[in-house]
Image (cartoon, rainbow, N blue to C red):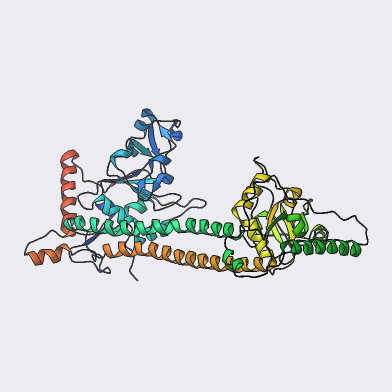
Length: 526
């Protein structure tokens, strides 16, 4: 393991523990920068932010190594800019975030100006004679420097590093001429990799659209059109519906008998015939969700108090797209739990639908899981047909849009029980329901496989970026200046000589100006 450099070392010679290419050197950032500083919040000096004026750059405005000007929402006037002249940005400045999200960078270009910044961004200036700013930026993006910055981080709710941490960052410096060859080669490789990452980033959206298309085809009969053509004497869908209605009535009577009460049977609500229904095959029929379920209700209306121990009570956040989770579920007493189950007791193959709030319409099927209760913001539907086909219809684009419309356009959407009962439902034969589920699951499994491969490829791309940067700063991307000099029979200036020459020139310049020995790169308040 390499030993970290001493914090007060401004070394121009190679670290003895580091294997550097011939002619390269290591140095602290402050040893070859003319300025390392940061800004101040204008309001601390009595200045207010303006709706327009001079851009005031924050950490969140740094994206992909540049200032994303379209995201800047704070501005200052000329008076504030003059008061904050220490942090007034110049072309070629390199910004490095030192508070909050540590390690973001941006290279200031002429189109970014005029601009100023605050104390969360370090401004690094004047590295050009020794290290080209663009190469410095790439060095600061490397995992070595990023890890160094993270290891220096301190603070509670907001991590931060000091300007002194920035000043003492240890950087590897190639000869000046070699830098000019490294940068275009690095940018070519990173550009190609970035294009690949952009294409990978589009895949999840494509797969989401694919799944929606599959569901739309499944619930319109298009997905199984060839299957129907190959089946002779399909059973009657009307007969299936009558069987389901008969089963529904029998379950009603059995429930009344078990409860010792005699309630008049409530016929299922007729489906919403005013809806602009999509086309379905001739062998299918439209009916209501109520006619296909033995129960449609919602959870407990009076929220029982949560306890440290007890039985789980799930809310809308526990209903995900297709499945139920128990993460951070509230716990209620045994007595409260039994009371909740009197209203509805979720069992395997029930369908749960979020009925209130921004996630209205999100639905899941209950698989094998421990007993649980639900709150009022969750609907329960107990289908008497293939439950996975039922869930597929709930997830289909048309049905989802229907639920969104039925829940209203207010700030707090609410899908009521009676609206859900009259939800239109396309009913195929039971055999076709099974075939639809089989085909949908096969296609979804294919999409899931692609999604996992994309995630793996994205992780590899992230690692490849750092691998490319590591190769660049090991001198492995282009022929080194030392190698070319020997091949061409000429001399070259090693980085250590360049560093010493720049140091001597600056020392001479400072001495001639004010007669005092110069300090290392100027830094603002820590």
